[in-house]
Length: 389
Image 1 (tube, rainbow, N blue to C red):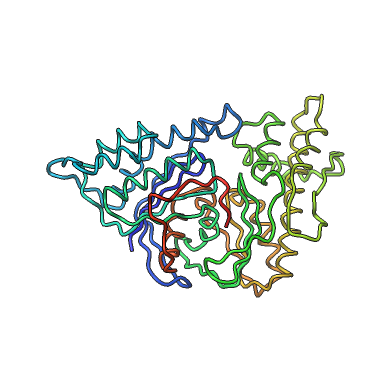
Image 2 (cartoon, helix red, strand yellow):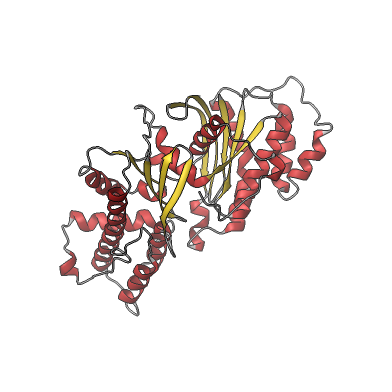
């Protein structure tokens, strides 16, 4: 089955084509075409993602990325003569009426290419920034209408959960029941899945997400957006210098580390950093020491909560996914943790599938298709910024 997938939940615009086969429990995936554009540089001056700018960039880049993905998949074939849209032009105009730049590109490009051998289109419906989500959804609706291809709405967090199913070389398999820690710029969740496509959120952040906390602390230290990699780089310098926290005299809290539930809270940690640097300019060594203590605090909380969940839920697989797990230090810490539980398989996505991408949306779309679930009429698919698993 060939699936075209679209992801625009935040500041990455992504279009992929995958070849999927197999069962829900034993699927196989091959990437035929993949095109992604990151807007991180554009949002740097804002210190975070600016929704209207993200929306505008998605409009600008979706058609060029579709073209690239089709070419890579060898599905790009020009028509001898460009056809007129005829009756469908009115439908397309209505679907893309809020995305004029995208509409203009769509009407220029789509009539010039032959319909690709695509069986379904998968698109992120949420959670995320609603202005950004709407662009991807409307583009998917327009393609679905023009090519007469079924449309599958996908939960972005389900995409992260299932992103581990593609590894490039080794074939990965999720054995159920499974437990997942999903950590990204907008989410921090512990999710239990007794069976495929059946999720229960057993713990979530009560305030800031872990990735958001990294970015906000980076801003306090005058580091550019995205701040997570910058903080981690400083912390790694401290480890190479074998810097001890005691010597740096910096001690940060581990919020909710001893709570009896599986929830998280990072606002107190963020505030503690703010007070530790208030009204003074940090020297380079102090920044390095603070980054080390901050990342260690994040590590301690995530590991502690995960360990508690592992002990309570008799899972066969433990997944750690989302943009934050691109952090190599945290990856190694979870590998250390799972060595204590030899009966549990640890699955972490490839680094390029940790951050937002459309490949994971295609994977989730395929499994939803196999489940036999009835999908909403494409006209009823809406962006849902706070969509839950």
